[in-house]
Length: 378
Image: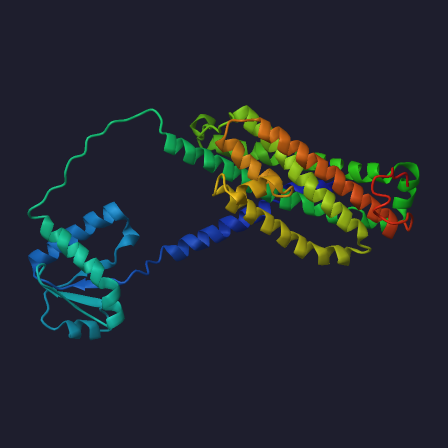
């Protein structure tokens, strides 16, 4: 499969969502470039207009351009209602009067929305004449515990998201893995030659190995782009367990997440008789994956809570919760326990899937719970 044209399309598959992301990102930038903030027409005396404009600029520089309404400086006017009635004015409200006694004219809902902005800017404009910014001295430190914790959380969350998307992208292929063999009766020949447990485990490990080939290709391409853009790995925050251990744990947890979901998909997909049945199963299974990811994401935002402990124990969310913990805590023994726990569930799921497959597809065996721990020889 690795040397087939299908696998080449499999490697190029992630380029499609990337291209779509760039296209929608450009469209989003184009949409966001249209400034939809309301415009205040400032029609006070020239000196007050200038002070109001300077105060607006200083506040926008400190608070961000989107924090305040836009302003348009106009000639002083005695009839603000006439300015609002002009079709070419483009302003929502008109500010007249003076800085000390401003008068805002407009619709009630617009006045409620913009009155606070006008009061803040006018206060800053009056303070310009009597107050000055206080100089702030600087004292630099090499590191900050708070910043370090935020960086480690960010590294863990990025690893969690990457693991989830790789899992949802790759594990879904296992659903239809046995349909062709069942249709062509090849599965009966295989079952006569080797134990069904070995068939299931072999298919799972082969798909995992193929996934690692794809990940190596995508990872190398991503690192090449990162290096070409001037990125340096030393600039990234270091996880609590250190980069070598974190990368090893990321690979192991991805393998566990893949095999946990893959073994479940293999058992479910083995019961399907046609590709249409597999397609019908795909949507609820994908939604289940999303719920698991959202649960793990919520749990890691509340370290030490019952939700985080449950996410670390529940097998299908455990890899996603534990990789974030690897970024935040330096202890390694919880990861060894979690990996063993997850591996036990992989074996149990495969065993249950094999028993159900033999009973419902191969039409052999008695009660499934009696055959659960009996060797499956085909």
